[in-house]
Image (cartoon, rainbow, N blue to C red; front, side, top):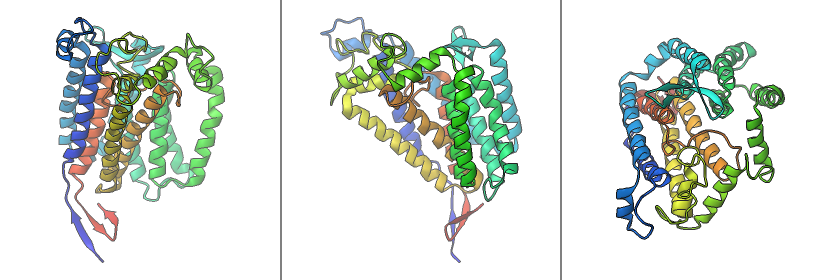
Length: 387
């Protein structure tokens, strides 16, 4: 019987990929929000010197603060989070409940705490990590996965409480992330396929009463426009229509930064520095730049999958699996939304979109994965991990 010892390590490649994406986001923030006062025929250096750097600077600031939080998160062994999972879970549930009472309404959802003047904090972003840690610990204690309803019910209850609170805001885009995280982690934990099929069918059936009683008219309009973009070309369909036009106008190599007449420079695309930042990338750098961004994301996801496969125990594996599901769904949904192949939601693009809460959530998620990799010391017996 072959024994192979494996030591933990800090994945600097994963860190480099995140830094590269943040750097790309920084440049895109300049182009999306930094309207230069220099004339159109000025040099790029002159345009940059006269541009508004407010959002690009904040983008880097939020990342810097996220790195500090991540450093603290890495310093604490990830098994400790499993031991205090109840505290982490219920603190986040409490925040989700309180925001329904005193929260700020933005984008039709009461999901923000207003802090530092007009700045906001979205508790549902950090609560994603609480859900991942809680589910990972719960499922790790089931060596064969969920094989009975008696095992499944506590898992669904654990997920259902924050999910109901988020739907009450209502923020169905974030709710979709929670559902995907749960489904992927259940599957990764070896849940019986009959339960997975039943949960999928139940989710489809639950969409009907949600449509009738919970989903707002604005959210319905977004979904209907996804099915037929010609339904409301000046209302709900305007944003997606302009996004698709801007993406196509970038062609192969793009129009470049601060291109005269660019749709991203003329404010044709609402929320272009947050939810529709990929549209700015496609118009600025074209097909070539878009592919390079997708390759960065593909490398990021691959590194996370590698870390999950090499984790020292089941708990660590499931943590990284949940992190991977969260980030991957954000990428697919956001870019798909910009291309009109996915419904329009308020889901940001990781490390590129502007937003402190999403930046901290994604940075802490990567920190959790690095934490597992750093402490993955284990023994391998013919391919099976023994913690």
